[in-house]
Length: 271
Image (cartoon, rainbow, N blue to C red; front, side, top):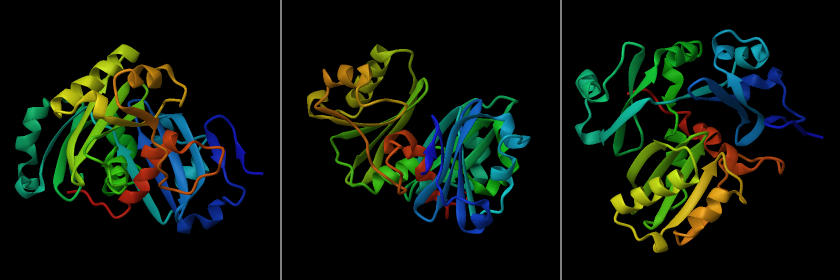
């Protein structure tokens, strides 16, 4: 049988001898990273919460990280960001735009398209950049680009709000007529703060909470107290069970949606 051990999965047929047809997906957080390996549209390997040092000096994952993959996509986290219309974006002005991000000496700036109409300029800790350099910065994208792309493909309604929870951070996206209307990220400490930020976003979008549907992915369970708390204020609250890759039954799709969705960024290029 295929085996899953906590957050570590290998398909029976997974073999690095076939790496030339696989896609390696890596999503980096502040101090750790998760990876997935896809064979076309099927997940064949996955693990999360590996120390960031393992990227630049692999020990446990040496075979996985050094294989010759067909495609590699690395999602970079942002310590600050700004969105702007593609029509106004000029890569020659990235340094000017970055001034609004208060870039520190230990941070570097990247600029990429987020979707067909928006570009994102964001800063990332230099230690993360150095770890990603091992795989080529041309293979990097904004960490949530895949998630935004995946939700956009799922015909989101204008009264729908999508949340992705990663540890103590929550991201929000909303769409109108199929176009990205809103993206933002907040840090929260407890359920009340999560509820507060969700209400704040709905207010900013001029949505009525009772008429707003929430779809949540990431670090949360269907029976989590956060779900029941949010359900007290919003029209519908449910787990986002959208699948980007074909998954085994043992893996809940919402838990790796953001990581798996990086597979939709294979053809993405740095602006």
